Length: 443
Ligand code: NAD
Image 1 (cartoon, rainbow, N blue to C red):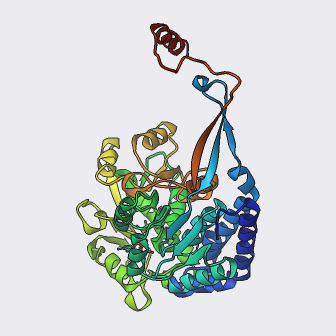
Image 2 (tube, rainbow, N blue to C red; image 1 turned 90 degrees about the vertical axis):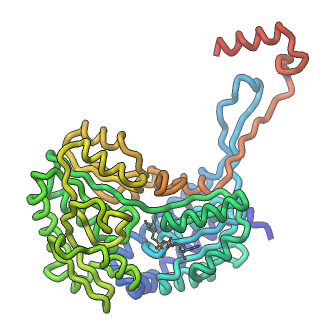
Image 3 (spheres, rainbow, N blue to C red; image 1 turned 180 degrees about the vertical axis):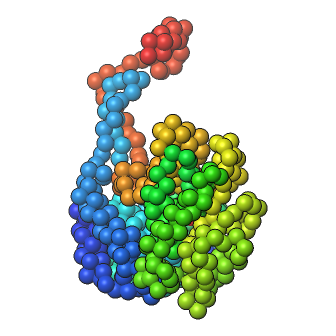
C-alpha cells in the first residue's frame, strides 16, 4: 500500500483527527491531570486548543503548501521553467517528550501526515495516561500502515532508532538528542532535533518591573517550570534586585495563593526521579521565597533562589522545574560573560524599554528564539520558526515550516527545446571563454 496519499485523502484524515480530538477533549484533560496534575486551563491552552488551531491551519492551507512552486529561472539555463516539488520523505519516526505530552506528540504528527508521510510515533513513557489516549485516538483515525503509535520507554526507542527511517523528528533532551543523531547518521537519515537549554532572562534598569515579574512568573511556573522555553535564570542589575524580587513574590502569591500546593493551577513534577534531581539543586540557605517540597505529591513550590555562584549545581544544567535563580550583573560585559558560559540556549528573554539595548542583546547572542518584554509567547506565532541552534537543536517547525520540514524539496528545471545555445558544449574555444567572461561581468 502506497502512502504517497493525495492531498484530499490527507486532508480527510486530518479532519477525522480533529473530530476525534474534540470528542476526547475531557479524556485528554483527565489523562494530563493524572499524569502530573496538569491544570485543566493549561491543558486546554497549551495542548488541546493549540493542536486544534494547528489542525485548522493545516487543513486550510494544505493545498497551498503542497503546491508546486514556480521560481525565477536562471539566465544560464535560458530558456527554461523552474519549479520546486514537495515530496514526502516516506517513513518518518517521531519521538516525543513528556512535558507537553499531547501537543509535542500530535503537533509534528499533523505536519508529517499533511506532507504525505507514513508515521511511527513513540510518545513518552513518563506520561502513560496521555500516551494511552494518544494511542486510542490515532488507532481510531488512521490505518496502522499509515500512522502507528508504539508505546514504550528507552528500549523501545532504541529498537526504533536501530531501524532505517527517511526522517526522524525528535523532541527531548540534548543528551538523548546526541543518541538520536548518532543512530540517524548510521543511515544518513535527516533529523530535526528539538532540544532544551539554559534560557537567560535579562532585566535592565529601564524595564517595567511589575509587568516583567508578572510575565516571568507566568512563563516560568507554567507546567511547574517543565517547559523547554521557560526562563531558566534571571539576570538583573544589582541595585534593582530587591525591588524586583518583591514583585516576583507578589506575582507568585497572586497566581498560586498563600499555599501553591493547594492551587489547582500549579502542576506537579513528573516523577520522583525528576523531583530528586530538582531537590538536590536547592541549597536551603540561598532560598529567598518558598522552597517547600513534598515527595508524596511530587510537589516543589515556585521557588526563588539567590544565586551568586555560577559553579553551583543549579547553574550547571537546564533546571526544567519551578526553581528560579536570580543572578545580578554590574554591566553589559558581565551579562555577555555569564550567557556565554553556556551552550546556545533555546530561548532568550530581555525586559527593557531601551530599544538599543534590546536590539543589541538580540543580535549579540545566539539562541533559538525569544521575546522582548515577555516570555514563551513566540511559540504561539505560526509565522515564526520554532527551534534551537547548537546544543538547543537542529531544524525548526511551526505553521508552513512544519509541512516543509517533513517534505523533501525537489528542484526541477524544465528545459525548452526551441533554443539550444552552443556556449556550454565542448570544444571550449577561446571565443566561448571570452563570451562567458563577458556574460559573468554583465550579471
Ligand atoms: P528525554 O530526552 O529524556 O526523552 C525524550 C524521548 O526520548 C522519550 O520519548 C524517551 O522515551 C526517549 N528516550 C529517552 N532516553 C533515550 C535513549 N537513551 N535512547 C533513545 N530514546 C530515549 O526528554 P524528556 O525528559 O522527555 O523531556 C525533557 C527535555 O526535552 C528537556 O531537555 C526539554 O528542554 C526538552 N524539550 C524540548 C522541546 C523543544 O521543542 N525544543 C520541547 C519539550 C521538551
